[in-house]
Image 1 (cartoon, rainbow, N blue to C red):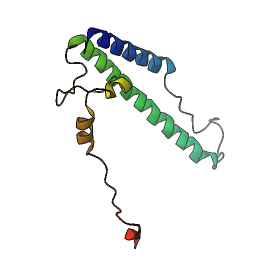
Image 2 (cartoon, rainbow, N blue to C red):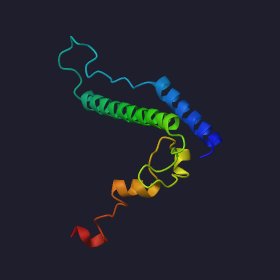
Image 3 (spheres, helix red, strand yellow):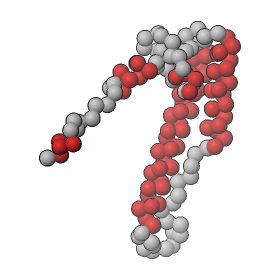
Image 4 (tube, one colour):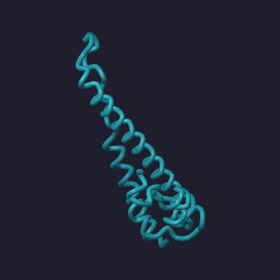
Length: 129
């Protein structure tokens, strides 16, 4: 990677970091709005729980991406010559790095780590019999 490309990637990563930190976490809606209320609307409870789960998963995902962004920024600072190379096969990551500037693996190594392309279990429409 050229120094210009490294600067561009660093700028992308810093912008992504700022975006994540600016937006912050989603607030988890409390299951009960009034602590003194007994019973409550039982129909609203599942929706509230689902909203809490969604917000919690989103917050965890954002924390994960932030950690990966910080690790990528550290890689740029510590070993700029190796940034953009797959951490497993040392081949250039390529266009994937443009979309996700914090990735460490090329497409092939990522697919191998994920278990390759998923093969469906059903082969024919009559498999359900």
